[in-house]
Image (cartoon, rainbow, N blue to C red):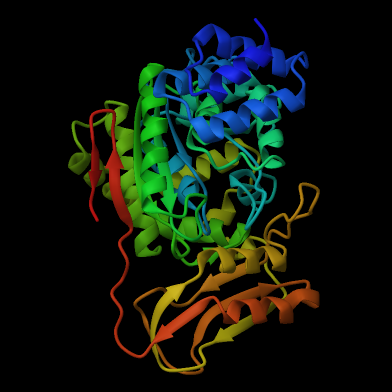
Length: 442
């Protein structure tokens, strides 16, 4: 078997066999196949695509290139949730304790962020003392005793994907659905979940900008999970404006606490109920989505979800008193209002630009070695469809380093559009993708 022949085969639109794909992934991971040949194959895939069987085989080969986490010693059906990423995407901080409070085990592996804000780990580390440094025994014990634990992804999880992504990033082959889907799902499979709920964002602040692209990606990932024996479902949700109001690490932790107290943003709560209900149904905890949403609402109203968050934080070295006193989270030194220049209704918020502004304040990483300021970020005061008066705050900037404040404010001015007439609120959920069908709501 020669890599040259396999590149030509894919270039000519033929399908690669499982054995050929395993040869490619193994050879590339081990350094036997050079970058230039793998780049040529990635470009051939970009133009010729892969069918669902090829994509599933590629996913499994990349998952098997490193450590495959064994969660068999954890009781019950382990359900994982993955978001394709957006601005103000706080769902894991709400969902994980809420689903755990419902009795469904959440054994979560998360990463750090590169972009608008930190990842889930960065956000949780704004809680004093919180650590993801658990032994495997502690991780399993915590999930078995309180249904929830979170650790960081290691370099041993799907190393082939990490190496291939770095190559795709510099060869203009990132945005092709078979490679995107296999990249995401290889890490999910290696992490050991029995079932997977995917939150596929769509819109300006998302990786996939169009509904067509988002539904295609959702379908590809659901097909992969199904073919590889995992119950998988995808929710396509809006990212044309930030989710919730908070963009920034400690700010998002506070918003998650508010949501578990029943006073969070309506869109964040609605999306968490949608995703959480699918998690409970896939785990067999309840018979249908309506029953699942009723249970999740009860867990918010009773405070059980908030108590699960406290237990989780304490078990991982964090200060649980922060949950009752979120003012003990890192605080910025300066609060700078961003004011509306005219009367009207917010007609559009450029989510990606707002996310960039939060990163410029220090809430995210521009480079892998950037240091995050956990206290800073942006809190929106208005969302699309809301009325606004001239001089009224559209957002509050939480600032420590003022060196880029003027630049940030100038960029933010172009991110809000105001219309003189009332504007309808946009939909939050565009549809659901299962192995059997695609339900599009809009």
